[in-house]
Each structure stands twice: as C-alpha cells, then as structure tokens.
Amino acid sequence: MKRIFLLLAALAVVSSAQAQLGLRGGLNTTLLNSKSDGAYGDVSANEYLGYQVGVFYAHKLTEHIALVPEVAYSRQIMQLRVDDYSIADAGYSARVRLSRSYLQVPVMLRATFGKFYLEAGPQAGFLVGAHEKGTEYLGTIAGTTERQIDRSAADRYRRIDLSLCAGLGVQLPAGFGVNLRSSSGLIAFNRGNELAYASRDDLKNQVLQASITYLIKPKS
View (cartoon, rainbow, N blue to C red):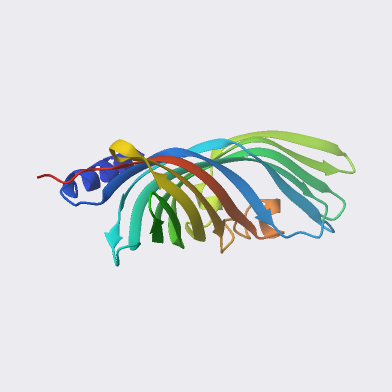
C-alpha cells in the first residue's frame, strides 16, 4: 500500500504545474449487487465505511465540458452473510468481513454549470489486496463444524473490476470542492472455484463515495 501512496504523490508532484490537477479523498460504503432466487442459498452484505484517495486531471474540451481521468486507491469493506443449501446432505454458511483494496482508474466526462458539475464515465480497477475474517459453518448429519478464518484472500477474487460511474459536485472557494459519486460493477468480483458462495451467484460491487477535492494552482 505504501507503493500506491508514493505513486499518487509522485503524480501530484510531477503534474503540479498543470492548471487543473487536483487531489481527492474521502469515505465510501460498499453494497452488494447480487441476483439470486434463493433456491440454493442466499448471499447478502452489511456495508462498512472504507476510504479512497486519488489524483485527477481535468482537461477542458469546451468551455463547459471536460475530460477528467483519475488514479485512485480505494479500500472497500463489507460483512458477507452466506447461506448455501445446495450441498447434498449438508449445509454451508459463513459470516465473513471482507476487506478489499483496489487501484482504480476512472475516466469521467464532466459538464460544468457555474460552480456545479455532473460527471459520468467508465472505471477500471485492479485488486491489489483482500482479507477475510469471520466464521464458517458446515452442517452434516453428524452435526455442525465451526471454523474461524483470518486469511489473505486476493487470489479468491477477480483481479480486474469494471464499473460505470456517475456523480455530481460543487467547486468551493480556495480550490476546495465536494464530490459525490456512485459506481456499479459490470462484472462479478467473485470467482467460481473457491468458497461455496463463490460458485452460486455473480456478486458485483456497488460503491457510494463522498469526497473532498482540492485543485492545485499552477506555478506562475
């Protein structure tokens, strides 16, 4: 994670002479988008607060339209509740706190109306780390076995994440601003060959973000 923060800092220093370079940081909450009929099990999630930090560059295309690429580090946390009924003569359930870290590159098209703006665009993400902590339960005719887990889990999830983003913001005095953004995953973040819950449904990210932004003034 230190390397990621160093990369973000280096981008800020190298590009500080550009007129529309900015910094962005704030909190997020991660929801779960899953389509399940409940016939073989169910997966749900309670959200926890995470955070994101990043740098962006607003390149004006017209007076009111700008292209805004960004590089950001995002920490996303959720509490998974898993119940799987598809195992013959057995049952599986888990209560797992899942923490994931992504390096993300959103490319937003921004329309400005005075101090306010709307934005939308695609986002590519790369999973740089994941951790699972909680309890798994396996029930059989002989009884229920309980196992505590506390493990690195990056290899249990897809490395690549693609999303669509939309947001709005306002530019405040002294270079500061406020930004609200949501992103919806286009592909599942789970893989089909690991945990019991990983093979049942496509689990997709749905993230809400609230950030403070700061525009770095160009050197005169």
